[in-house]
Image: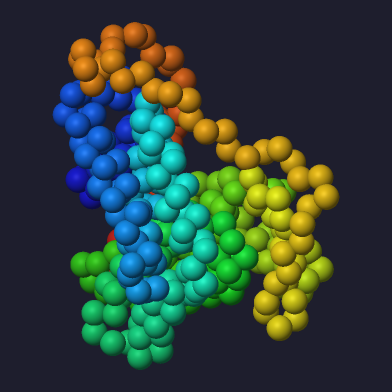
Length: 293
């Protein structure tokens, strides 16, 4: 548990921009990653469709993490957008993960196969971590259909139970960049409280009585009774596309790290985020202990 919290603190600290400087080694690794992903994204079209999905999924997760780190190079944003665009263009990009998650879920819930809890947890983690980067009607449909699932595996001694599928799905669905989402952003431990609002929202989306759109896109989507959807051009789309990152100061890569002072607020944001994360982890751990009693 202690080790998990340390890892959580490191991850949160990095993504919130706590690290004040980049070392020469950090920049070297970043440059190496940029070169590697330029090569991978340039040749991904030579792969089979399923292999493309796997390679591009790794790209959006890896580059999506790196673009959250303060003072990253602008190429990271560009490569992330390229990987995301290529993945969204593949039909079945969300259904690919839906199939893997649902199969593991069936093996666990209905068949109770040995080791199926670990597989379900793994498929859920990689699948949802990818889908949160894929704003598309296919992703909305896949996650929306998971929202009613409340079943949770009976506790196995010595293991951490995977969450109910509906809770995991709403946490991911709410991370997509919707215009006018049914709830504000929320931390993991409040997912169950926000689940009813998202179920109601998806019910109206599925019925076709509500359309939806994503920030930065110039179309909105409306589902049909057969489960397909229409792409409707917006007459006056908001000018809310994410602005590209400006050039980064690379002097630290050449001359060593900058010593300029940093604002205090990233530390506060990181601290609040860390506390929320620790509270969620402790809550999960407390549930595990209660199940044992």
